[in-house]
Image (tube, rainbow, N blue to C red):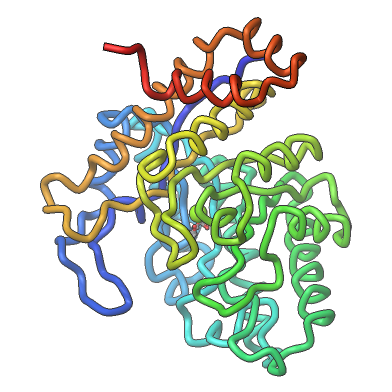
Length: 346
Ligand code: GLO
Ligand code: MG
């Protein structure tokens, strides 16, 4: 059963290049100016943080927030675009310094829950029922600062509030082991799926898997995807690439390890990913050196690499592959894959 592939990215993937040690290096592009670029680059869907859709939402009354979100919906319609998901941004406000749902201060925890509930309302206004939770600050820099059992229970309780707030939403957890925290409480796909089981509606809690996050956890992204597919929990992917265990590089898909990228495409395609409306998200950023006029190529390239790897993957002889597996000739299988990746001999 082959997959069906449509692509999305978030406004943050057209990025100004700031990093922890230096300011922006490219001018900001207004959201309205980004929208027409989506179709030009071959993308049909938009991923949102709550405040990508409604900037300064903490300063607005609920009715104003909804009106602003509805206006964004009209802009999406005008460009023939669909909202894939909304993610509450729980990592920038002063009240989320010590975490969102796991903050030690109850007033801060309440803020995180209220803001997430509002993200669900924004998602409804944008026409999507998918909420992504990247639990950026649900962890510690100092192990003794929080109780990990209580922390996980608090995350599950916050998710329960959202599931009850709208009985139709589904929540995809985006696991990441570190950065900005030293350690997070939900570092891997397995943790996220275990967390789903602690909630009031496990069938409505799944995952979005980011390649770089799996690599940072020392895991293979395609195997993480296989695990989530087996659990029927793979509701989105954030494809990108990552050069080893360092900061989250958000490199273009396939830029570091083509074979690892091929295996992600292969597992998605082999199991009909996208046939139920799942999107392929590319959570990539242009490297800091890129000049402003060329700072969209990482998106174009990531999509192109995905599609070329799809063609390549489908072109490998399945008969030969099966023969080699049956014969346990994995050295020859290794060469079959390497030959495919290197292309025909000149
Ligand atoms: C950072 C994450 C981030 C999320 C986004 C959506 O490491 O990958 O980009 O995907 O905030 O929640
Ligand atoms: Mg991501």
